[in-house]
Length: 400
Image (cartoon, rainbow, N blue to C red; front, side, top):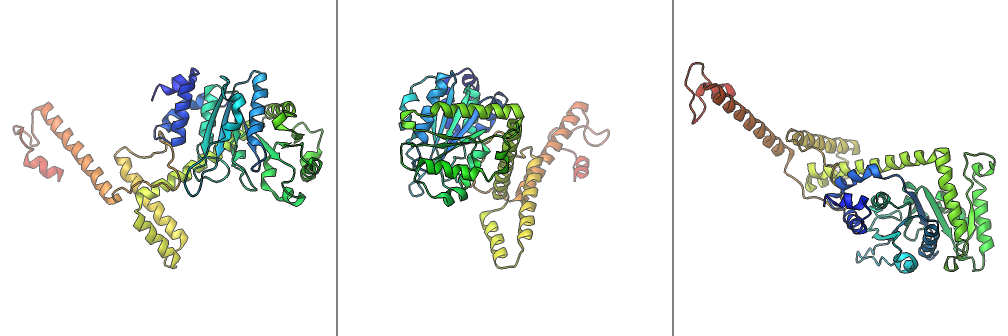
């Protein structure tokens, strides 16, 4: 497994596929491998493509990929499909609409399932994008699941977010209140061969007019969000879409906004990992029965929520101290975060862990005393011959 990183960096597509599988499965070794990849990332332009179900996201992603390939760019695609809440399965059928680019050696397509995650993405989407970045892709396209009004997690990952709208998706009030429209950098009205295209364009313009910054046409630090019209199935308007995506990339680099986006992204990710780490440690430090007991005390007003928090943090601190003596503190490095809902079997109590740690310290102390005695040829009592079979009474008394 250690050679996967070297093979990936050398352009081995099989190594990339294998590492992406480990990322999606959240293998315990993934964290260590991603640490080695991290210095080689940050070069790809990550583009999120989101919109309601049936808006033609997969077809549009395929056409955008073809245009980028004509411009000599290597493209990675992460297509996210929803998971059934009943069977837990996912069709992963987005690539069916990408047959035109599926066999292109300069294109890598990976399908992921949400596995119950909300926000329109899988938990492993960002790590998958980082793998494709290190693999050498110039552009990474992330297609979200069919999004509604609140599936906006893509904005935390992508440098540029393209929001797709289609005629007949709702009235102007629906467009104004939809949270998904607030995250767009480029707006695309797809399926323009349908009736009502002008109305959708007008609604989007009305929504953007509420942003005071959009009126400052002469300000070089303000991005003017374009509204483009396409018929993805026929390839109409695709060149203009890619031109707009590239213009936004140049804008981010010219103004320094890309650096700010990177910092905001990593702050969000580190906070999320920190929260997951503390939840994991809480499950290690407190048994399920003890946790339920604390929850019951809060529900029956015998304990305040802040008291419950102090109790749990105290248990985590005790476990950290006990494990620190054994040199096993922390699991954040070298191990991927455990998926939400998946709990590790609780360990023994903190008191037992402390007792084991003390026993190990005593054992090391006895070993040092024996080694010193062998080196000097003397026992614990001055002038007395050393007893090789067991320590002298004086030495035993001093240890006690």
